[in-house]
Image (cartoon, rainbow, N blue to C red; front, side, top):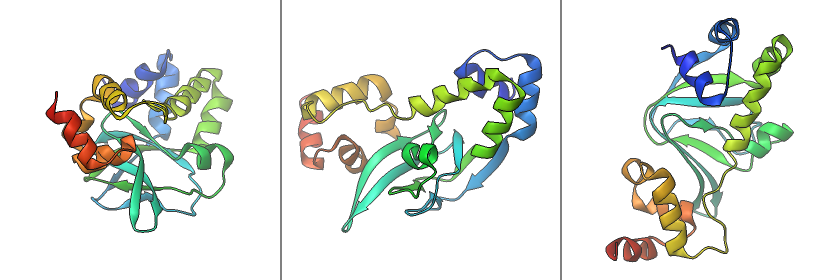
Length: 181
């Protein structure tokens, strides 16, 4: 199975012709650890499908990184608000490890949709990137459990300090939760 077939199978149903069109336009890209996919103030003009590696999205508040997204193999990575509105991003997307991705620029997405309405299914990708596994009304334990049940692999890919930031709890609270498990 090609990378294009794998990606499209996760999204929906596509014909062989549509898969071939997709294969022609996707761009493989490689980034080094610590390299930025998107910097604060830039407009997010591409979505990235992670083939190998990990990245994270954060806002920088004073000297702290407030993590708002953790992305691993099989994830789509973008700053939703900047991408949809084509406005400067208030977040940064940074490689946590060396990263192998397929890049899909917004112009290419528009071209694909013009060729076949089936590519409207790519909108599902955009919506899925907005999913938060918790809300501010959830307790620290509920946030941890929800993330652990839905995306336990994140606990293997990222340090607990980053997981705590993503859950909007302190590292100490996360350690206490994990010690009673």
